[in-house]
Image (cartoon, rainbow, N blue to C red; front, side):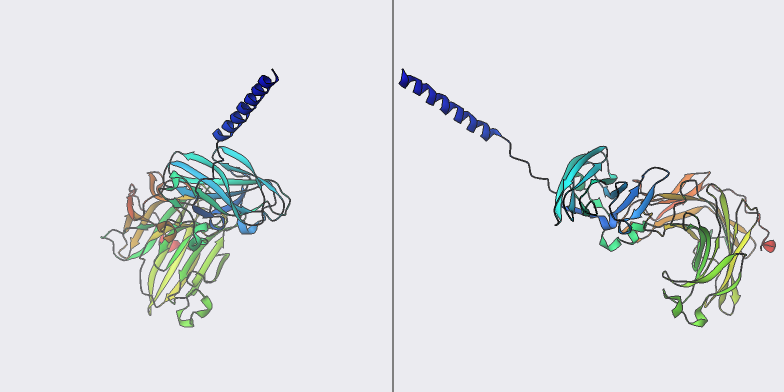
Length: 441
Protein backbone atom coordinates (compact mmCIF):
# COMPACT_ATOMS: atom_id res chain seq x y z
CA UNK A 1 0.00 0.00 0.00
CA UNK A 2 2.82 2.39 0.85
CA UNK A 3 4.51 1.73 -2.54
CA UNK A 4 1.21 2.27 -4.38
CA UNK A 5 0.74 5.57 -2.55
CA UNK A 6 4.22 6.70 -3.47
CA UNK A 7 3.52 5.86 -7.14
CA UNK A 8 0.39 8.00 -7.10
CA UNK A 9 2.32 10.86 -5.45
CA UNK A 10 5.10 10.74 -8.05
CA UNK A 11 2.61 10.56 -10.91
CA UNK A 12 0.69 13.54 -9.57
CA UNK A 13 3.92 15.51 -9.11
CA UNK A 14 4.94 14.73 -12.70
CA UNK A 15 1.65 15.92 -14.10
CA UNK A 16 1.81 19.15 -12.06
CA UNK A 17 5.36 19.93 -13.26
CA UNK A 18 4.51 19.01 -16.87
CA UNK A 19 1.39 21.14 -16.73
CA UNK A 20 3.37 24.11 -15.39
CA UNK A 21 5.98 23.71 -18.11
CA UNK A 22 3.23 23.49 -20.71
CA UNK A 23 1.66 26.72 -19.42
CA UNK A 24 5.02 28.48 -19.58
CA UNK A 25 5.52 27.45 -23.20
CA UNK A 26 2.16 28.96 -24.32
CA UNK A 27 2.79 32.42 -22.81
CA UNK A 28 3.23 35.21 -25.42
CA UNK A 29 6.62 36.96 -25.34
CA UNK A 30 6.43 40.78 -24.93
CA UNK A 31 6.02 42.54 -28.29
CA UNK A 32 8.84 44.86 -29.30
CA UNK A 33 8.05 48.50 -30.10
CA UNK A 34 7.15 48.99 -33.79
CA UNK A 35 9.57 50.56 -36.23
CA UNK A 36 9.61 54.37 -36.13
CA UNK A 37 12.19 55.71 -38.58
CA UNK A 38 10.85 59.22 -39.27
CA UNK A 39 12.03 61.87 -36.81
CA UNK A 40 10.05 65.14 -36.56
CA UNK A 41 12.38 67.64 -34.82
CA UNK A 42 10.62 69.70 -32.18
CA UNK A 43 12.97 72.60 -32.86
CA UNK A 44 11.24 73.25 -36.16
CA UNK A 45 7.77 71.81 -35.68
CA UNK A 46 6.72 72.45 -32.07
CA UNK A 47 5.31 75.36 -30.10
CA UNK A 48 4.17 75.75 -26.51
CA UNK A 49 0.46 76.56 -26.22
CA UNK A 50 -1.50 77.77 -23.25
CA UNK A 51 -5.31 77.50 -23.28
CA UNK A 52 -5.40 76.32 -26.92
CA UNK A 53 -8.61 76.92 -28.82
CA UNK A 54 -9.90 79.58 -26.42
CA UNK A 55 -9.98 83.37 -26.42
CA UNK A 56 -7.14 83.25 -23.87
CA UNK A 57 -4.87 81.18 -26.13
CA UNK A 58 -1.17 82.01 -26.01
CA UNK A 59 1.59 80.65 -28.25
CA UNK A 60 5.33 80.59 -27.58
CA UNK A 61 8.39 79.40 -29.46
CA UNK A 62 9.95 76.46 -27.65
CA UNK A 63 13.14 78.44 -27.03
CA UNK A 64 11.21 81.18 -25.26
CA UNK A 65 9.86 79.03 -22.42
CA UNK A 66 11.01 76.36 -20.00
CA UNK A 67 8.64 73.42 -19.71
CA UNK A 68 7.96 73.90 -16.01
CA UNK A 69 4.27 74.75 -16.01
CA UNK A 70 1.39 72.26 -16.14
CA UNK A 71 -0.53 74.83 -18.17
CA UNK A 72 1.89 74.61 -21.11
CA UNK A 73 1.22 72.09 -23.87
CA UNK A 74 4.05 71.08 -26.19
CA UNK A 75 2.34 70.61 -29.57
CA UNK A 76 4.16 69.16 -32.58
CA UNK A 77 2.66 69.21 -36.10
CA UNK A 78 3.33 66.99 -39.11
CA UNK A 79 1.47 66.05 -42.29
CA UNK A 80 0.71 62.49 -43.41
CA UNK A 81 -0.03 61.81 -47.06
CA UNK A 82 -1.89 58.53 -46.59
CA UNK A 83 -4.56 57.04 -44.35
CA UNK A 84 -3.61 53.99 -42.28
CA UNK A 85 -1.75 53.09 -39.12
CA UNK A 86 0.76 55.47 -37.59
CA UNK A 87 3.16 54.44 -34.83
CA UNK A 88 4.13 57.36 -32.60
CA UNK A 89 7.00 57.68 -30.14
CA UNK A 90 9.10 60.29 -28.40
CA UNK A 91 12.85 60.75 -28.37
CA UNK A 92 13.20 62.11 -24.88
CA UNK A 93 15.38 62.49 -21.82
CA UNK A 94 14.88 63.71 -18.23
CA UNK A 95 17.47 65.71 -16.30
CA UNK A 96 16.78 64.10 -12.92
CA UNK A 97 14.44 61.58 -11.34
CA UNK A 98 11.11 60.68 -12.87
CA UNK A 99 8.71 62.85 -14.84
CA UNK A 100 5.12 61.96 -15.63
CA UNK A 101 3.54 63.48 -18.73
CA UNK A 102 0.24 63.10 -20.55
CA UNK A 103 0.55 62.39 -24.26
CA UNK A 104 -2.40 62.68 -26.62
CA UNK A 105 -3.07 62.07 -30.28
CA UNK A 106 -6.56 62.69 -31.59
CA UNK A 107 -9.03 61.63 -28.92
CA UNK A 108 -6.67 59.19 -27.20
CA UNK A 109 -4.57 60.09 -24.17
CA UNK A 110 -2.15 58.21 -21.94
CA UNK A 111 0.25 58.91 -19.09
CA UNK A 112 3.94 58.11 -19.43
CA UNK A 113 6.59 57.83 -16.74
CA UNK A 114 9.92 59.08 -18.07
CA UNK A 115 13.42 58.53 -16.67
CA UNK A 116 16.98 58.65 -17.95
CA UNK A 117 19.49 61.40 -18.62
CA UNK A 118 20.32 60.14 -22.13
CA UNK A 119 17.97 60.38 -25.10
CA UNK A 120 15.92 57.27 -25.78
CA UNK A 121 12.86 56.47 -27.86
CA UNK A 122 9.68 55.83 -25.89
CA UNK A 123 6.78 54.20 -27.74
CA UNK A 124 3.55 56.12 -27.33
CA UNK A 125 1.09 54.01 -29.32
CA UNK A 126 -0.31 52.97 -32.69
CA UNK A 127 -3.26 54.90 -34.08
CA UNK A 128 -5.44 54.88 -37.18
CA UNK A 129 -5.78 58.01 -39.32
CA UNK A 130 -8.68 58.14 -41.75
CA UNK A 131 -7.29 60.59 -44.28
CA UNK A 132 -4.24 62.50 -45.40
CA UNK A 133 -3.63 65.84 -43.72
CA UNK A 134 -2.02 67.63 -40.79
CA UNK A 135 -1.94 66.04 -37.33
CA UNK A 136 -0.34 66.91 -34.02
CA UNK A 137 0.88 65.27 -30.82
CA UNK A 138 0.26 67.06 -27.52
CA UNK A 139 2.46 66.60 -24.44
CA UNK A 140 1.47 68.01 -21.06
CA UNK A 141 3.35 67.83 -17.77
CA UNK A 142 1.83 66.07 -14.75
CA UNK A 143 4.65 65.75 -12.21
CA UNK A 144 8.44 66.08 -12.14
CA UNK A 145 11.51 65.90 -9.95
CA UNK A 146 13.71 68.19 -12.05
CA UNK A 147 13.26 71.77 -13.28
CA UNK A 148 11.72 70.82 -16.64
CA UNK A 149 9.34 67.98 -17.29
CA UNK A 150 11.53 66.59 -20.08
CA UNK A 151 13.56 67.44 -23.15
CA UNK A 152 11.88 66.10 -26.26
CA UNK A 153 14.11 66.28 -29.33
CA UNK A 154 11.85 64.50 -31.82
CA UNK A 155 8.47 62.94 -32.37
CA UNK A 156 9.13 59.54 -33.97
CA UNK A 157 6.77 58.11 -36.61
CA UNK A 158 6.32 54.83 -38.44
CA UNK A 159 3.57 52.67 -39.90
CA UNK A 160 1.63 52.42 -43.14
CA UNK A 161 0.33 56.01 -42.92
CA UNK A 162 3.92 57.27 -43.30
CA UNK A 163 4.56 55.25 -46.45
CA UNK A 164 2.92 57.90 -48.62
CA UNK A 165 5.27 60.58 -47.29
CA UNK A 166 5.55 62.78 -44.21
CA UNK A 167 5.91 66.56 -44.52
CA UNK A 168 7.47 68.61 -41.75
CA UNK A 169 9.92 71.47 -41.24
CA UNK A 170 13.48 70.21 -41.56
CA UNK A 171 16.68 71.90 -40.47
CA UNK A 172 17.00 73.93 -43.69
CA UNK A 173 13.69 75.64 -42.91
CA UNK A 174 13.73 76.01 -39.12
CA UNK A 175 13.32 79.79 -39.47
CA UNK A 176 11.25 80.28 -42.63
CA UNK A 177 9.18 77.18 -41.98
CA UNK A 178 8.20 78.40 -38.53
CA UNK A 179 7.05 81.66 -40.09
CA UNK A 180 5.00 79.71 -42.58
CA UNK A 181 4.55 79.96 -46.35
CA UNK A 182 3.99 83.35 -47.99
CA UNK A 183 1.32 83.49 -50.69
CA UNK A 184 0.81 85.93 -53.56
CA UNK A 185 -1.59 87.08 -56.28
CA UNK A 186 -0.13 88.61 -59.45
CA UNK A 187 -2.71 90.60 -61.42
CA UNK A 188 -2.91 90.55 -65.22
CA UNK A 189 -3.13 94.01 -66.80
CA UNK A 190 -5.28 94.08 -69.97
CA UNK A 191 -3.28 94.40 -73.18
CA UNK A 192 -5.33 97.45 -74.16
CA UNK A 193 -3.93 99.42 -71.22
CA UNK A 194 -1.25 102.03 -71.80
CA UNK A 195 1.43 102.66 -69.16
CA UNK A 196 -0.13 102.38 -65.69
CA UNK A 197 0.06 105.49 -63.50
CA UNK A 198 -2.30 104.58 -60.61
CA UNK A 199 -2.92 101.16 -59.04
CA UNK A 200 -6.06 100.71 -56.87
CA UNK A 201 -7.09 97.80 -54.62
CA UNK A 202 -9.54 97.00 -51.81
CA UNK A 203 -8.79 94.67 -48.92
CA UNK A 204 -10.79 93.16 -46.04
CA UNK A 205 -9.51 91.21 -43.03
CA UNK A 206 -12.34 89.46 -41.22
CA UNK A 207 -12.59 89.02 -37.46
CA UNK A 208 -10.15 86.53 -35.98
CA UNK A 209 -7.65 86.78 -38.83
CA UNK A 210 -5.74 89.76 -37.42
CA UNK A 211 -3.01 87.52 -36.01
CA UNK A 212 0.12 89.18 -34.62
CA UNK A 213 2.91 88.99 -37.21
CA UNK A 214 0.61 89.27 -40.23
CA UNK A 215 1.42 91.53 -43.17
CA UNK A 216 -1.58 91.94 -45.45
CA UNK A 217 0.01 93.55 -48.49
CA UNK A 218 -2.51 95.12 -50.86
CA UNK A 219 -0.57 97.08 -53.50
CA UNK A 220 2.70 95.51 -54.49
CA UNK A 221 4.71 96.54 -57.55
CA UNK A 222 8.15 95.87 -58.98
CA UNK A 223 10.02 98.26 -56.67
CA UNK A 224 8.01 98.16 -53.41
CA UNK A 225 4.86 97.35 -51.47
CA UNK A 226 1.97 98.93 -49.53
CA UNK A 227 -0.31 97.29 -46.95
CA UNK A 228 -1.21 96.87 -43.29
CA UNK A 229 0.32 94.89 -40.43
CA UNK A 230 -0.40 93.53 -36.95
CA UNK A 231 2.76 94.37 -35.01
CA UNK A 232 1.66 93.55 -31.46
CA UNK A 233 -1.42 93.17 -29.29
CA UNK A 234 -1.60 96.97 -29.07
CA UNK A 235 -0.06 98.24 -32.33
CA UNK A 236 -1.04 98.06 -35.99
CA UNK A 237 0.55 99.84 -38.92
CA UNK A 238 0.01 101.03 -42.45
CA UNK A 239 3.31 100.37 -44.24
CA UNK A 240 4.71 101.72 -47.52
CA UNK A 241 8.26 100.81 -48.60
CA UNK A 242 10.46 101.34 -51.66
CA UNK A 243 13.60 99.30 -52.35
CA UNK A 244 16.83 100.99 -53.32
CA UNK A 245 18.27 99.94 -56.71
CA UNK A 246 21.50 99.13 -54.85
CA UNK A 247 21.43 95.46 -53.82
CA UNK A 248 22.26 95.04 -50.13
CA UNK A 249 20.57 94.03 -46.88
CA UNK A 250 22.46 96.74 -45.01
CA UNK A 251 21.13 100.27 -45.66
CA UNK A 252 24.39 101.73 -44.35
CA UNK A 253 26.18 100.33 -47.42
CA UNK A 254 24.01 102.20 -49.94
CA UNK A 255 25.99 104.95 -51.75
CA UNK A 256 24.35 108.39 -51.51
CA UNK A 257 23.43 108.49 -55.18
CA UNK A 258 21.48 105.17 -54.81
CA UNK A 259 19.44 106.19 -51.77
CA UNK A 260 15.67 106.45 -51.96
CA UNK A 261 14.71 110.03 -51.06
CA UNK A 262 11.63 111.04 -49.07
CA UNK A 263 9.68 113.82 -50.83
CA UNK A 264 6.82 114.22 -48.37
CA UNK A 265 4.87 112.24 -45.79
CA UNK A 266 1.49 112.37 -44.09
CA UNK A 267 0.73 113.51 -40.55
CA UNK A 268 2.22 111.21 -37.85
CA UNK A 269 3.91 109.05 -40.48
CA UNK A 270 7.38 107.72 -39.57
CA UNK A 271 9.94 107.64 -42.40
CA UNK A 272 13.24 105.78 -42.12
CA UNK A 273 15.61 103.35 -43.80
CA UNK A 274 15.08 99.59 -43.69
CA UNK A 275 17.22 96.53 -44.32
CA UNK A 276 17.51 92.74 -43.94
CA UNK A 277 15.33 92.00 -46.99
CA UNK A 278 16.93 94.34 -49.43
CA UNK A 279 17.21 97.95 -48.31
CA UNK A 280 15.50 101.22 -49.01
CA UNK A 281 13.03 103.75 -47.67
CA UNK A 282 10.23 102.76 -45.32
CA UNK A 283 7.26 104.83 -44.15
CA UNK A 284 4.57 103.73 -41.71
CA UNK A 285 1.61 105.11 -39.84
CA UNK A 286 0.61 103.59 -36.51
CA UNK A 287 -3.11 103.15 -37.04
CA UNK A 288 -5.55 100.72 -35.40
CA UNK A 289 -7.40 99.53 -38.47
CA UNK A 290 -10.51 97.46 -37.81
CA UNK A 291 -11.35 93.90 -38.83
CA UNK A 292 -14.41 93.63 -41.03
CA UNK A 293 -13.86 97.06 -42.61
CA UNK A 294 -12.82 97.29 -46.25
CA UNK A 295 -9.79 99.53 -46.80
CA UNK A 296 -8.98 101.19 -50.12
CA UNK A 297 -5.36 101.52 -51.30
CA UNK A 298 -3.98 103.73 -54.06
CA UNK A 299 -0.43 103.99 -55.39
CA UNK A 300 0.83 106.47 -57.98
CA UNK A 301 4.02 105.60 -59.90
CA UNK A 302 5.40 108.09 -62.41
CA UNK A 303 8.80 108.98 -63.93
CA UNK A 304 10.19 112.21 -62.48
CA UNK A 305 12.86 112.83 -65.14
CA UNK A 306 16.63 112.54 -64.79
CA UNK A 307 16.27 108.73 -64.58
CA UNK A 308 14.25 108.91 -61.36
CA UNK A 309 10.73 107.71 -60.48
CA UNK A 310 8.29 108.95 -57.82
CA UNK A 311 6.10 106.61 -55.74
CA UNK A 312 3.17 107.90 -53.66
CA UNK A 313 0.71 105.94 -51.48
CA UNK A 314 -2.69 106.82 -49.99
CA UNK A 315 -5.11 104.80 -47.87
CA UNK A 316 -8.85 105.36 -47.43
CA UNK A 317 -10.07 104.09 -44.02
CA UNK A 318 -13.89 103.90 -44.18
CA UNK A 319 -14.16 104.87 -40.51
CA UNK A 320 -12.46 108.20 -41.37
CA UNK A 321 -14.19 108.75 -44.70
CA UNK A 322 -11.24 110.38 -46.48
CA UNK A 323 -7.96 109.60 -48.19
CA UNK A 324 -4.80 109.86 -46.08
CA UNK A 325 -1.32 110.37 -47.52
CA UNK A 326 1.28 107.91 -46.26
CA UNK A 327 4.35 109.11 -48.16
CA UNK A 328 6.00 109.96 -51.44
CA UNK A 329 9.47 108.59 -52.30
CA UNK A 330 11.85 109.22 -55.21
CA UNK A 331 13.89 106.24 -56.45
CA UNK A 332 17.07 106.93 -58.46
CA UNK A 333 18.26 105.03 -61.55
CA UNK A 334 14.64 104.18 -62.34
CA UNK A 335 12.40 105.31 -65.17
CA UNK A 336 9.10 103.47 -65.05
CA UNK A 337 5.37 103.49 -64.55
CA UNK A 338 3.63 100.80 -62.46
CA UNK A 339 4.60 97.22 -63.31
CA UNK A 340 4.40 93.86 -61.55
CA UNK A 341 1.09 94.57 -59.80
CA UNK A 342 0.46 92.06 -57.01
CA UNK A 343 -0.72 91.38 -53.45
CA UNK A 344 0.65 89.01 -50.82
CA UNK A 345 0.08 87.62 -47.34
CA UNK A 346 2.98 86.76 -45.06
CA UNK A 347 3.70 86.08 -41.41
CA UNK A 348 6.83 87.73 -40.04
CA UNK A 349 6.67 86.15 -36.55
CA UNK A 350 7.91 82.61 -35.89
CA UNK A 351 5.87 82.60 -32.68
CA UNK A 352 2.55 82.79 -34.53
CA UNK A 353 3.45 80.31 -37.26
CA UNK A 354 0.82 77.77 -36.10
CA UNK A 355 -2.02 80.33 -36.22
CA UNK A 356 -3.99 80.64 -39.43
CA UNK A 357 -5.08 83.84 -41.17
CA UNK A 358 -6.70 84.86 -44.44
CA UNK A 359 -7.54 88.04 -46.34
CA UNK A 360 -9.85 89.13 -49.17
CA UNK A 361 -8.84 91.33 -52.14
CA UNK A 362 -11.49 92.79 -54.40
CA UNK A 363 -12.14 95.48 -57.00
CA UNK A 364 -8.65 95.92 -58.45
CA UNK A 365 -8.14 98.63 -61.06
CA UNK A 366 -5.31 100.26 -63.03
CA UNK A 367 -5.44 103.83 -64.39
CA UNK A 368 -3.25 104.49 -67.42
CA UNK A 369 -1.52 107.59 -68.78
CA UNK A 370 -4.38 108.09 -71.27
CA UNK A 371 -6.83 108.62 -68.44
CA UNK A 372 -8.52 105.20 -68.77
CA UNK A 373 -9.43 102.81 -65.95
CA UNK A 374 -8.85 99.08 -66.54
CA UNK A 375 -10.36 96.46 -64.24
CA UNK A 376 -7.99 93.69 -63.10
CA UNK A 377 -10.06 90.51 -62.85
CA UNK A 378 -7.46 87.80 -63.45
CA UNK A 379 -4.69 86.80 -61.03
CA UNK A 380 -2.06 84.07 -60.76
CA UNK A 381 -1.63 82.38 -57.38
CA UNK A 382 1.92 81.58 -56.20
CA UNK A 383 3.71 80.53 -53.01
CA UNK A 384 7.26 81.06 -51.75
CA UNK A 385 9.99 78.41 -51.53
CA UNK A 386 8.77 77.23 -48.11
CA UNK A 387 5.63 75.99 -49.83
CA UNK A 388 7.25 74.87 -53.07
CA UNK A 389 9.77 72.74 -51.17
CA UNK A 390 6.85 71.32 -49.12
CA UNK A 391 8.33 72.33 -45.79
CA UNK A 392 4.76 73.44 -45.16
CA UNK A 393 1.63 72.85 -47.19
CA UNK A 394 -0.84 75.07 -45.31
CA UNK A 395 -1.33 77.62 -48.07
CA UNK A 396 -4.26 78.47 -50.31
CA UNK A 397 -5.62 81.16 -52.57
CA UNK A 398 -8.10 81.84 -55.33
CA UNK A 399 -11.80 82.76 -55.35
CA UNK A 400 -14.28 82.07 -52.54
CA UNK A 401 -17.27 84.11 -53.68
CA UNK A 402 -18.31 87.02 -55.90
CA UNK A 403 -18.80 89.11 -52.78
CA UNK A 404 -15.24 88.65 -51.53
CA UNK A 405 -13.29 88.33 -54.79
CA UNK A 406 -9.80 86.88 -54.43
CA UNK A 407 -8.49 85.44 -51.17
CA UNK A 408 -5.17 84.36 -49.70
CA UNK A 409 -4.72 82.04 -46.72
CA UNK A 410 -1.67 80.71 -44.87
CA UNK A 411 -0.43 79.10 -41.63
CA UNK A 412 -2.58 77.21 -39.12
CA UNK A 413 -1.69 73.73 -40.46
CA UNK A 414 -4.96 73.38 -42.38
CA UNK A 415 -5.30 70.48 -44.80
CA UNK A 416 -6.36 72.04 -48.10
CA UNK A 417 -3.59 73.25 -50.40
CA UNK A 418 -3.92 75.26 -53.62
CA UNK A 419 -1.57 74.26 -56.42
CA UNK A 420 0.69 77.21 -57.26
CA UNK A 421 0.87 78.92 -60.66
CA UNK A 422 -2.87 78.62 -61.31
CA UNK A 423 -4.88 81.58 -62.64
CA UNK A 424 -8.18 82.67 -61.09
CA UNK A 425 -10.82 85.04 -62.44
CA UNK A 426 -13.14 87.13 -60.30
CA UNK A 427 -16.50 88.53 -61.40
CA UNK A 428 -16.06 92.05 -62.87
CA UNK A 429 -17.70 94.96 -61.09
CA UNK A 430 -17.58 97.29 -64.13
CA UNK A 431 -17.76 100.44 -61.94
CA UNK A 432 -14.38 102.16 -61.70
CA UNK A 433 -13.30 103.97 -58.52
CA UNK A 434 -14.53 107.54 -58.12
CA UNK A 435 -11.31 109.34 -57.23
CA UNK A 436 -10.54 113.01 -57.75
CA UNK A 437 -6.78 112.74 -58.17
CA UNK A 438 -6.27 116.49 -57.96
CA UNK A 439 -7.79 116.65 -54.47
CA UNK A 440 -5.73 113.85 -52.96
CA UNK A 441 -3.70 115.05 -49.95
